[in-house]
Image 1 (cartoon, rainbow, N blue to C red):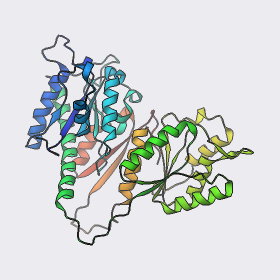
Image 2: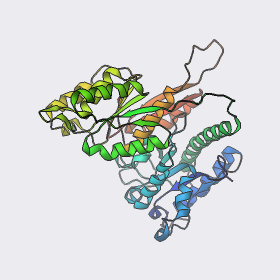
Image 3: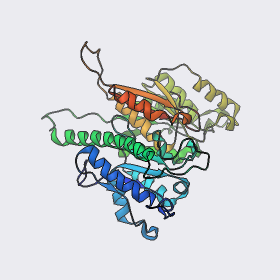
Image 4: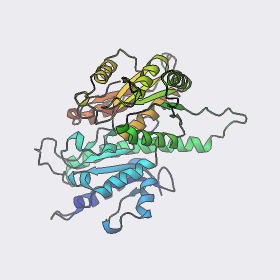
Length: 402
């Protein structure tokens, strides 16, 4: 029986079959990891929890409905990241299935995808979906580049698995509480329905068309209303009027900007493209604006001088994070950023707390890859003081801006 939902699983362990091969040790690594995780999670929660993984791993028939349903019905995915995992099409498919279910973060912004690092791997080699939190190191941090997984019988392994279990339990407790409230609280008669969250999704350059389609589809799955069909009108005046009306009517204006300026409004004015002009209009008229840069973005890769100056000015523009954020991230995390913006916008206004009263607090940690060895201590320190930690990982070694 599952802890969160009797019809699903609490944890799905995603791994590459090579990492569970018999290497002469007393036990297979993944099998031992899964069994210990199941028992320890049961002890931590005090009641049954469903941890699912395929012990047989007959990859010739892995892609069947049993695996797919197990992934999609799981509350948390634990990914055992390794060189084999990085190269596995099967593991990438499991991550994609988990992404399709949506809700990759809890209301408190905890990532539901937890990367367990079996080897010392650079951050840029982690799967995209695993970059939403700092990760859990199950290798010797002092080892050379030829690191290996911790011995499953070692104290270091046990200590780190308990840290992982504490994070899993926190996620499951939050999801269970949300499910209990939503199922037990009747909607008052005559209650006014909450208006859907509205997002203007600006035009993007052709190289980002796939990311834009993905973002639109995933946000619509989350119940977000998308305004995206501008242009038309294609003429400069008509386009400006339509774009201004759109950005003033929505809750959030979202812009995907990359290494290319996009399609010009007028072929005689190549510096004035639809993505650039919509960004400028939103800067002036939008309530809130979120500018998303893909992981491939690099100012050095921009060949258009005018566009390069525009992007440089944009990134150095004085701004309040309540009105404008510029974030470089993967397409999966782009979805999470918009969902987080919706969550913040829908929070009630917080008034000053009277003396003697408690107030929930959240700490945003701007995390660099070199800080991973120390993050667990910081999270534990803050948790003991009832402070929720939201880790913001760097992308390509460059911290997020916003």
